[in-house]
Amino acid sequence: MSEPLRIERDGDVAVVVLDNPPLNLFDAATFDAMERVARELVALTDPADPGRARAVLVEARGRVVSGGVDVTYFRDIAEGPEPAQRGGELWARLLEVANTFEDLPVPTVFAAHGLCLTAAFELALSCDILLAAEKASFGLVEIVVGLTPSMGGPQRLAERAGPARAKELIYTGERYPAAVLERWNVVNRVLPDEGFAEAARAYAHKVAAGPTVAHAATKQLASIAVREGARAADARVPEISGPLFATDDLRGAVASFLSEGPGKATYTGR
Image 1 (cartoon, rainbow, N blue to C red):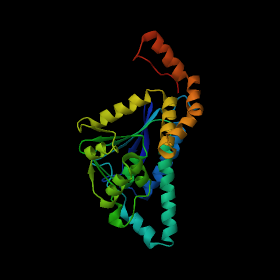
Image 2: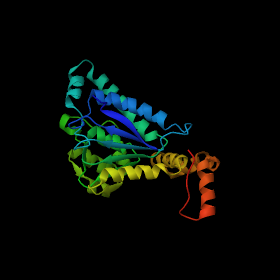
Image 3: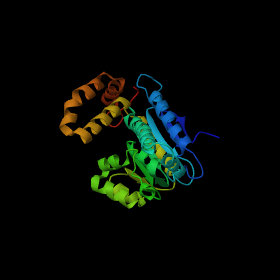
Image 4: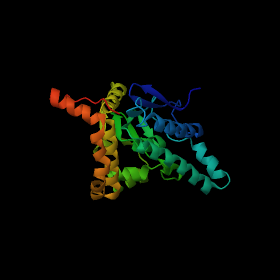
């Protein structure tokens, strides 16, 4: 059997594939694979590697993105020894994965073609861009088993949509259509169902073709602004954005702009 979560390379894009049929449930093997994939992505996107991936795309196989977590996994923790400690250890593991995805130094894109629940939705919230097909729907439905989402979902929803919307979504445990979450600024773009997978790949390749080092700076500044304020981000601009002038990305793009005109800049750096 193939890994429930694996990486495939598509040119400059590292594609993380969730493939655990029939419902892509997150179970012990999937959680283990998440940790392995996160470590591999750190190596694959290393700025020192000239052949590194310049973007990451997360996609799923099958009818749904994910039906959520295999509840027997929670049962085994709850009914086993020291459940509070073991539960805390689980969340620590999963948060490390979420943080690793969030901190990757390249653009990260999550493509949701259908139903996307619990852990998969939380992983999506750790990515920079969330693309959704028209028929996609999302939910953090942990209330049905007496839990709150703890892989970063509440706090990252609050960042995107505000705390009131985050609480509403989690308190109700409802499934929300892609169009609603686009209005709430949780989903970046809703794309047609027809050709969605191809459109998501094209989007990932588009951002991969950009100035990767500058994208990493953008991610840092945006995160600082959200969590510490705009003035805190301002204070970090010289150290984060100043080094961009020393990159091949900038030198090549400026030369292209000056020789070929606006809209034709190319990036051949890291």
